[in-house]
Length: 348
Image (cartoon, rainbow, N blue to C red; front, top):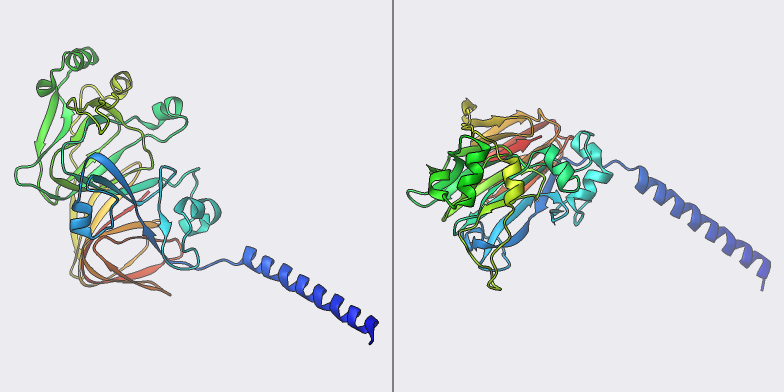
């Protein structure tokens, strides 16, 4: 037996394996995936005011019959969406933001800026208000503030929401809150499917019963409850109120925040611009046939709220239907949406 030859051959094979291993590591590290579409798996939240509409209307598998929120596109630590397609399948959106910022146009920021939700308000939400960036940074451990907006997908006939207040000064606001003059304080407005509301930080607001809403917001989970109808949770306890913080951040006097909707038709597709603001821009695409367009923002967040079809980019085609959520990344230049469907589209 030639032991010298055998040992030499073994050593060379081991060295070859080591070189191959190192080469693979280098390739994996340096490889830049050209990914144009990221389909996302939502996270669901049970709420005291939730119901089953997320299952009944969208076919989602929900955790209980009191499911109030679908965090559809989220990189927030309290509810992180995961990728369902491509080489990053199973990865959380926050991981992609941290490790593959090129997918998002290399935009700056410590956290993914936006959060898309669908809310099922079977009963009334608490009357609440959100802080701005400056207040949240100081008082909520660096959390973002929360400016948001609502597109009313569906609601009962003669539905309403709380949107603003009638106090003329901070002193009057405090007096009305502490004396429980809720009917005098709160402004109620009628709503119907297709309505859109811009809700900047500092606005007292609440969705009311039997309302289904798509919400686009800053990526924040900070809410200050002002009034909760004296409800109790499953343990018989009233939920915590945050009166002083709510008073601190509420805009007084209130300002009516009416959305300035703009509509145009492009090749048979109706494009409605709901808002183009400091934190986000939001649109509705009503597609019948083929809609061809360019990606004009670093990336786009897309939610299908009606119908079905497919999205085609330079290298990928993604079948989509009602209840699907996806991101068109910075690698997308041209895209075609085909079918009969409605999407809510947003970007920072």
